[in-house]
Image 1 (cartoon, rainbow, N blue to C red):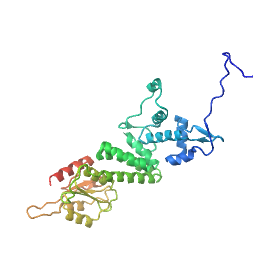
Image 2 (image 1 turned 90 degrees about the vertical axis):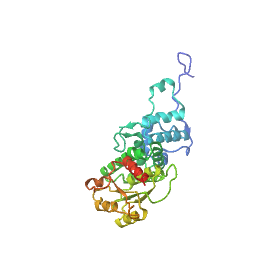
Image 3 (image 1 turned 60 degrees about the vertical axis):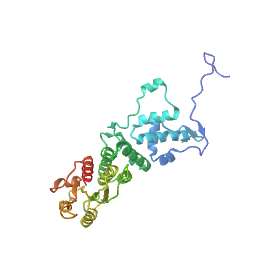
Image 4 (image 1 turned 180 degrees about the vertical axis):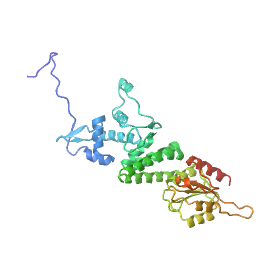
Length: 342
């Protein structure tokens, strides 16, 4: 006989459990983690803290991620990769899956922070007070998420331009990876290498000017690292920024021998030569003076290149008669002016 309560209605049954799915349906947590490039622990943490988790079980009681669950966690990954904190990302991901919350709940839920804001929140890398885009880059780099790195780096260049993207997004993230690498017994080498590779790739792709320019070599800017110097990314940023400005530029890259640089200067007759030295042991004052003394052209109208020194390696050895821009914006402006005078 069925029991009834005081209102004459049967008592409520036990709460419904998660929907059952046949064995072989849905994804196990480990499989989904490998597909997304995150750890299973991260997925379990998101389930426990934010309710972003699998909603079905097999007949044997094993939890499984349905297609809807996967779509929600993919949106969670996308949002956290852009720098949005996990709690806000989870709310947004759930909203995308189920629709907007009731008005009363929406009034209590703060919106995700704007992308142009700054963040001091703790993370996997020691970023400090940086743009939120840095946090997204750092998360993608730690996950070794190459597509996300390419997408985010391209987006910040298009949004802010090369100079701001380099100074306020790329450099802080690269420095954070470098600090973690130095303090963790080389455990982040792969993260630093992947991030640097994608920074380089996006900078080279971004060097195309908005309006095609003449390819004449005369009057161009020649970029070269000092002999033995391997750090090229700052020069690649300058190359990209000059290219976007329509300034003709030639990049020689890392560790340019003295003889090769001398031959390139004589062959091109550049308006300016930029020499980069990251370390003081690589700075070559005699080479800078030699390049600045080069002359070509007809008698009475002979000219030579302006020489600009870049990088912290020159702090102890700056020859007279050369320029030392304070940073990337100053270098771009000086070189644009020098090329315009030719």
